[in-house]
Image (cartoon, rainbow, N blue to C red; front, side):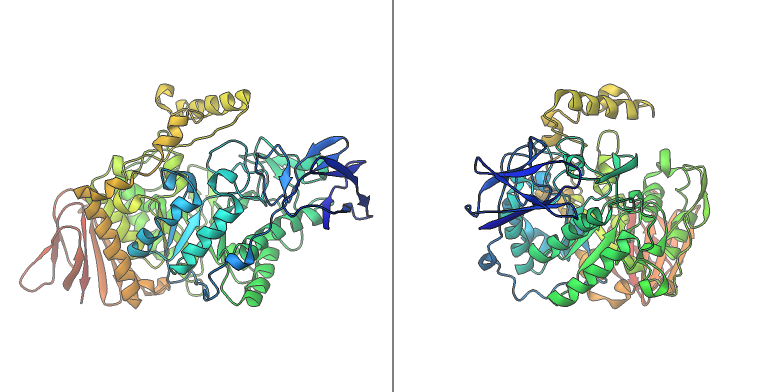
Length: 573
């Protein structure tokens, strides 16, 4: 006997169809409908809402896509092999972001398992998986999900995700899952037929979720219950919360704070760390400020300013939102204080943006730093990686600045060997009109910035997706192998030296020369010296070289170090 239940205060009638037979349900005063049915534990079912059969909003499995029947499913508890896993804390660790569909040629959880040993050898601590919840079509980035409780069937479904988490934990890797609660995708979203899940207004990606309006209590519980389910049932170690600045909540307790409280409770019960990482463009450390100090109590947040200052200083790009960045002064300032825009004027936004971080109380480990993300590559016009327009030495400089910084470093799949395959924006909308509108909008967006629309990949073209798959054979190429060895050495040094994982920005000393294009970071007895210029530079920094891209030279007194162009060196005093 199984109890089917669904919160549906809007419709007049709700029944449940199980394996082709329709059964009545009883409604309670709080808008829930329930009915008991004697059925198989893998029965196909759907809710008949005012005569229309719809998938379960909390569907655990969608074998035939998001428009059709749901299926009962329970993870096999006996299949878990990670009973000895005690978790991993984020501070002192590192993160590796990947997209299941393009990480391997097969694009499945099981295929990803075969590459986990590479990540162990690389030296990262966490795997961060882009969204895997139910979306319409065969492939996309995952941010257009409509059934948040299910796992995309083509990747391997819920059982495949269980196998991946098992395998990661067996190798000492934590798992972070990217989740999206700020909007729903354009195809397969039936939530409005059940209840007031959607509020007035919209953000960049879709209509706003009702997390603070009338009858929002059950909607909030729908979100928080989903978040906790990943960590409890699937043994996920943390969540990356997509674009939290788009969560409109004017209640007394913001949903993010409520989620932080509930996550702490679950963590205490499970006996292992659980991590919440926000993506936000607000440059506001309130998200990661402890609740006792008036913040939301999240563990970390992405920091685009660090990416922007490193990328522009190394690459020379200044277009769009890069306009305010580019100087070594801006890079040094951002490395010292976490945000570049911290109550300062943003020309891209046309207003003052951000607020300062209290670096005496806020550890830098709560900010994620990176040279690449799915956004910073995939939202370029042609999805080109830095390896397409930078020298290997420039890639190494960017890696050194991130991996040897006080911040928590994050890599994007393939970055570690300078992958040449692009990561492009791809979709597979089955609806012709939606697919055409997506492709047209993408081309128009970049044509407005001066790109030839013919050069913009069609997101609906299957080749756009296939081009974005990693080519693992590249690792044996001489240049790629050298970049990979550099990343391994940098991550190994990070693990070895306490100065590198020291998260307190007050202990970081940065010097630079705008004209000669060098910058140095002093981390205790270590000094990271980067020459961003093409010519060799004499830098007033001494010590024993312990790691470099190209060999440096020193004078007899070792008071200055000559660093080749597009290179870095780590000195120990």
